[in-house]
Amino acid sequence: MESLSIWHMLVVLVVFGLPLFFVFKSPPSGVNRFGQAPSSMGFGQAISTFFKKYATFEGRASRSEFWFSFLFLVIVSAVLSAIDPTDALSGLFSLGVLLPTIALATRRLHDLNRSGWHQLLSYLFPVGTIALIIWYCTTGTDEVAPATTNASGGTMSSNAVEVLERLAKLKDSGAISGDEYDAEKRKILG
Image (cartoon, rainbow, N blue to C red; front, side, top):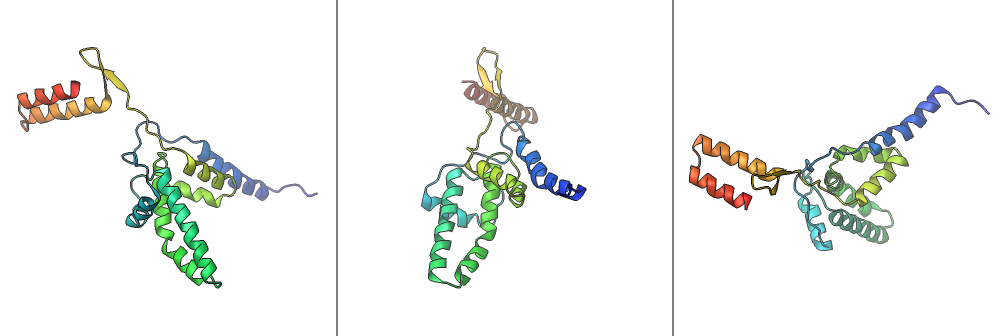
């Protein structure tokens, strides 16, 4: 048996090592940078959202939105393949839903606080493809903002601190009065 050349080792490194680098690299910590957490959806609502957000690569998609849309695409492709033995209809349908499928997968990865570019890992089979399937099945999580202690000894989130800071700036600029600031502060602090 011939020994492995440098090119063989390079191919093995690219096919297995490169995807492993991205798989084990954790997403940025903290609150999800892609927006609010998505709501869970039913089958019809997921299909409707799939077509409404035809080319929307921003925001997040829940697991239910992703998997119900995926189920819809598989069912329609199977029906079109059964109707047309030449697969022309199925091919046209696949071409028509290519862009929204990529957009949906991007939004699904955003729910995990990962870039949509991670979809390219699917081309590094098997490691990249397996990692993507696992990520698509993973629940999107948002880390809770760290709490700080207020003057009365209670805790408040960093979001409340940010709101109070913005209100203070508005008061200092004269956009709101001192009384309005105090009223809003009391609401936030409870």
